[in-house]
Image 1 (cartoon, one colour):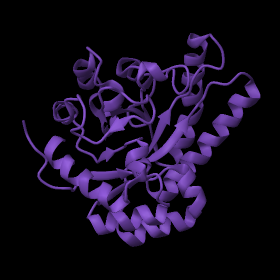
Image 2 (cartoon, rainbow, N blue to C red; image 1 turned 135 degrees about the horizontal axis):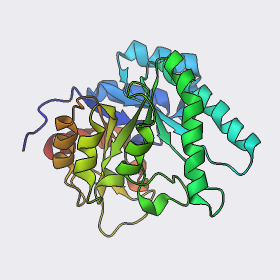
Image 3 (cartoon, rainbow, N blue to C red; image 1 turned 30 degrees about the vertical axis):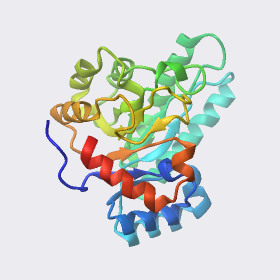
Length: 273
């Protein structure tokens, strides 16, 4: 299996060093020689949008994506419109930061009608596409693990995400492949091939056994059971050669010194990705 020989594609998804401010994450990337960063909107808001753009550009970093938009389903039309408005703000933020991709975590159902919620997701993306196109931002649908359907997203397989994305032009809407969420899927490799040019992002971490927590239980690459390199090779065979984000939700990782996390991240990236 082919190994990655350099860090040219490596991106720090900011949640991996959640205790760091955006400035600290930017400075940490510079010290570690990590060329890409994926900011989270709450960290951008803390620093201010213009200041966030300035500090990232001054550091010479590139922005792989902005996390996150989505969360489309809601109980009332007014709430759903408010979420569309927030997604438009997210698109503007992505454009200002130079991120070509806004990651969509599509949202849970507000009630028991999961089919209707999935319809609201499609409607929300449809409303967002023209605005995103005007700003040069592509929308990346990230399917989440089925265990998160009730709390975070009704889009739970790559096949679902592909079907949803295919309702729109490929230059507008694609998918994000996060190994933590999709590694288990018996249709994974056929769906990666199906996605092809629509793959807009690739996120890596690992699935720890036993799994401590469905949200905060991700491991550093190599600490779990995911065939990360095989998945990486599959997305490359499908045509994706963009940045690779390390996205780890884990309190023990968050509590560790950030520079140590980045050093381990680089080591495991070469070894397991």
